[in-house]
Length: 329
Length: 266
Image (cartoon, rainbow over all chains, first blue to last red; front, side, top):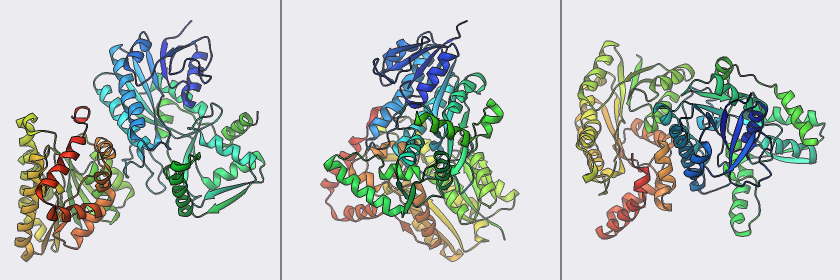
C-alpha cells in the first residue's frame, strides 16, 4: 500500500537526494521541488515526481505542496565562497518562509527542517555541543547567520500551529552526489590520489562526522517520533583532523605525506589569492572564511536524538570504509 | 567575601557576551532577563562549565516592581553586588509618528527608569563592596541626531548624562561609573543581517559583542568615565566635532535611508 504523499525540497542536493530516494523506497509518494526538471541530480524512481519550482517562488511551492501530508525542507544555499549575503538570505531565509507559509496553508501535518550544527557556533573548549548550549560567539559567516534566522522562522510558525522539527546536522560524509556539502569525500579522494597534502597546522581541531545513511534515517525518525518545536543534533563520532587523516590514510593504504604549514600563513596566502582571484578569476575552492569555518572546534553530542528518536550512529570506521569503497568505484 | 556582578538583559546579545566575559574572569553572576529568552539555559551552562556561581531572575524590566523584586532578591539571599551592569534596553523601531504610545513608554521605562531606580536601590549594598563599579550601556546614538532613533537616542543621552554626574557624586564612596557608547553591534540575527547590508563605513563601525564586552569590562575595571569602542567609531566622534552640520545631516540621512524599512520592521 502506498504511504502518504511527502514534499521534498533540495532533492538535487547531497542530503535531499539520498532522502528522496529513501522515502521513495519506503513507498512514500515523493513530490520533489526542483529548479531544473532535466537535472541529472534528480533521483529517478517511480515514486518520485519532480515538479519544476524554486523555494524563492512561493507560488511554485504552493501548487507543488498541495495534497502532501509531510514536508522535508533540505534546500539551502551553502556556498561559503559566496560573498553576497543576499544569495544566502533569499534561499535560506525567504525560501524557508515560503515553504513554511505554503505548508501552513495546506495543513501539512509536520515539517522537518534540515539545519546545521554550525548554528550553535563553536563548542566551549572541548565540551561537546548539545541542543541546550547557548551560542557563545557571534555569527562567523552568512551561512550560519541565515540558517539561524531560518530556524527562528520555523519556531515562529511552530508556535502559530505548524508542527515542525529541526535537525542540526554535523559534517555529513558518505556515498552520494558530489556537492559543496561533502568535504570529507573530497578529502578522501585527495588522500587516495595525491602524493602530498598541505594542511594548516591546527590539526587538533575537533569536528563531528555523520554518515549520510544516518542523516537520512534521522529524517524518517524525526517524522515518526520527533517532538514538534524541538531541535535534535544529528551527528556521529567526534574526531580531530589528526585522527581523521590517520583513519583515512590507513583505510586507503595511502602513503601520502602530510605537510603542516602555520595556520595564519595559510590564511594569509588564501587572503592574497582571494584578492587576486577577483582580478584573474582563478577557482579557489577554499577561501579564508571557509578555512576558518573548517578549523572551528565543533565536537557534538547526539544523546538527545539517541534517547528520544532512537537514532543510531554508524561507527566512523565503518562509514569511512563504505565511503572509500563507493569513491573507488 | 563572595561578590556578584549583576547584569540586566543578560540572556542575549551584548548582555550575554558580557555575562560570558565576566564568567571567564571568574566573577559570580546575578543575571536578569525577560522570561522565555533562554536565561535558565545560559545560567546553567555558565554554572556547569565556567566555574562561577550564577543566580538568575526572569523579569520584565519595563515595570518598577521588577526593580524592587531584584533588590528584594539580593537582600534575601544576602548577595554582595560589586559590579552593576545596566544593559537591558529597548531599541528603536522607526519613525516617531508610526510608534504606538505603549511602545514609547515602555522604551523610556526600560532605558531610563529602570537603570536609575536599580542604582538607587542597590547603592547601599554596593558601598559595602567598595571599590565597586557601575557600567551603564549607552549608545553612540546619545551624541547624534538620528531620525528613526529619536526616543532611543534621547533615552541614551539621559543615561550618558546621568552617569557623568552620578560618577562625580559617588567618587567619595569609591564607586566608579563607566558609560560605554557602542555603535552597531552584531547581536540579534536581524541586526546581524541589517549590519551586513550597510555601506562600507557603517559596516566597519559594527563590533562583535564579544569584542565590545572585553572593551567595556576593561574600561569599567580601569574606572574610565566614558568610552566609545572601535577605531572608526572614535574617528566618527572626532569628525562630528569637526564637520559642519549640513554635511552630517546629509550623511545620516543617506545611511538611514539605506535600511530596507519595509521588510525588516517588526
